[in-house]
Length: 209
Length: 361
Image 1 (cartoon, rainbow over the protein chains, first blue to last red):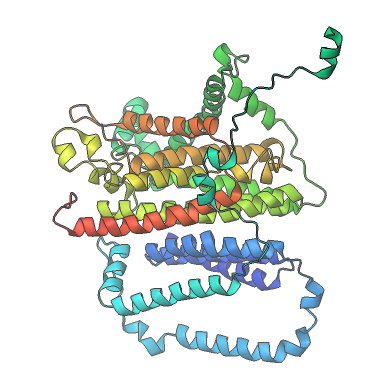
Image 2: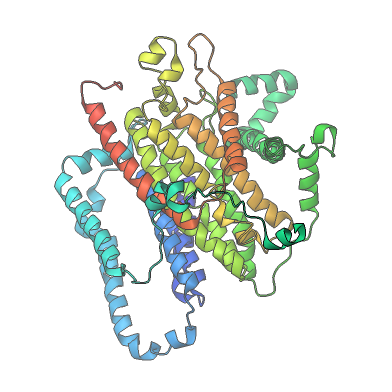
């Protein structure tokens, strides 16, 4: 057995086990961390497929950003696991149906007959072949319009998400940094010129007399 | 280098070498890689130890104090004493902590900080893994360093660590964005993701042609990005003035409150290893790595070391100089200043590269 094959089996086993723990773990934080583990191993699988760009971007985007925010939210939730489990038997038939459909579809794809995977020659790339460069070339030439449309949709999604959650409170006391920086000493403090007080206190005058 | 080592071994061991070589030949790549890892890790951990010492000394001098001077000559054995002390201390587990994740936290902090060194070239050809996607690897693995803090903060099951974890996850994500965008301009002008190629791309240009190499390094044409990267680097390592994650005057030490002994030392090691790493990355991306600033002086590792030392001094300098950022100011700087600035500068560099005035051929 080749070393790569051993690696493949390690990565795929850990992926499957971690994915199982994601849905069986009682603690949502543990589940999120198992999902991170699953992402890592999938990234390892992609690395074995010589897709180093996708593999590293998976870690950068999903592990480095998405899951961090996910954990951020999950850590703050006080999830009552008993209440979550209440509707289990009622929802089981629908869930089982959706699951069975998903498995059937994946099996159809993975069997590979429909894509003629068996006819595909094994690719061997030259040593200086850059996965990243090839991907970029295709993305910005053949698929330039879909790529741009996708990015515009994402941008709109960002703005919409911000607008939906943005509520300006009337009693907001947030500070404006630009105003703070623009403050001069004379705005805050007034130096008043006044004549010195020369009158002696009354008691002292009495003593002299 | 590999051939030299093999020849040396052969000459030292003489007739014993041939049978020995037959024995170890199948696993030789493994041995050689492990040897290289040790060659990187041992000096790195030593530098971490003495960086803590240097930090205390430098900040001491800046505040007109003497700094540590009791242990050994000039206090030079202080980091060894500190390390030994931490090593022999008991690792305490809070009663309500999630034990497994509590142990996992420090490990997840130190592992990326060490794994990142795999792709850092120290001099021409001095690199553990000369991979094509080196910069992507750096971005990917450095983005998972935050898990150590989050996991530790959550697993401690205590208020201040949890605050630390919350602050860390928001801060790290914000500054990663500007850091990554700043690196995109470097990637554009050097036309490669390979770190060695990025350094070598800074060796040509008008300045290098005149023998003044330092004018061709990326810091000058990409000056705003250099500044953004350096400041984001300070924020990524949670160093002062961006150390709200630890914030010893507000939340004591954030995620490290419940840790003691070696578990605490792991966070400490990770922070300083990350500092050294950021300085190495800055010198590779913007300061020409191991290239010498003047044409007739030879290139080499000493230049890389000197540049890293200068950036590390900058880290310590600003820690002694600036007060801590308020959290909303920190977020504002990341999102409202750095991100728009980097986005605009990417456009500027793109137009510049396509115009006849381009300096990158």
